[in-house]
Length: 62
Image 1 (cartoon, helix red, strand yellow):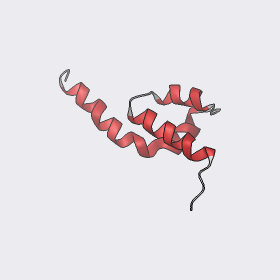
Image 2 (tube, rainbow, N blue to C red):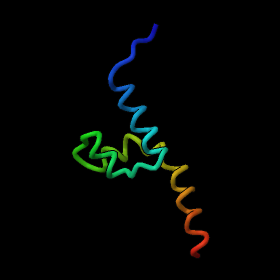
Image 3 (cartoon, rainbow, N blue to C red):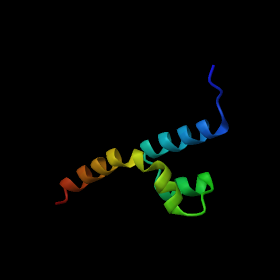
Image 4 (cartoon, helix red, strand yellow):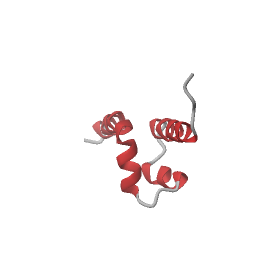
């Protein structure tokens, strides 16, 4: 049986939080990362869908 570590919960929390719209800068603070680059590098896989959703918000303005 596979053992769960604290980092599994940490990663799941961050991934789900970003998917729900928590800004990357806020997540950096919550996770205690020293720079935004660290957070972005670790969780950028979550952001492509977010980018698409954010671009849709601009469609009505443009």
